[in-house]
Length: 142
Image (cartoon, rainbow, N blue to C red; front, side, top):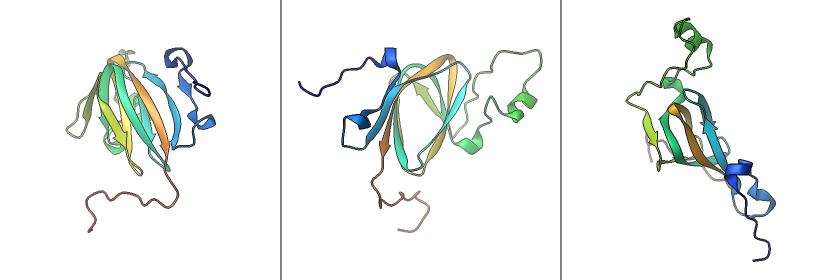
């Protein structure tokens, strides 16, 4: 299998397939969020595909989430409680458990928040061909 590359993602974390592949796949890797921590993903010029491999958490719209590291989160936290609080499920949130897949099409955003056991997920980043229109949200007339 000439040209084939095999990488242990658990050991190396992430790989840049753009060095070898001509297609839209530009980043792959395993990501880990510690318990109670959050990260925001934005599909600005790229699309994201995630697959939860371990742990649990919540995916929410950014405007509905108070990030754990924000000044507002510090204001709401009780001073004697140094441990991160579990994410509070909201109606708009999507529970993330092992085996859950999440796709972020062009122009979308989400905040991932890890549960009490943390969250591990496979993350692929895909480029979007130039000139491709941003998908409609469903609120615009066709």
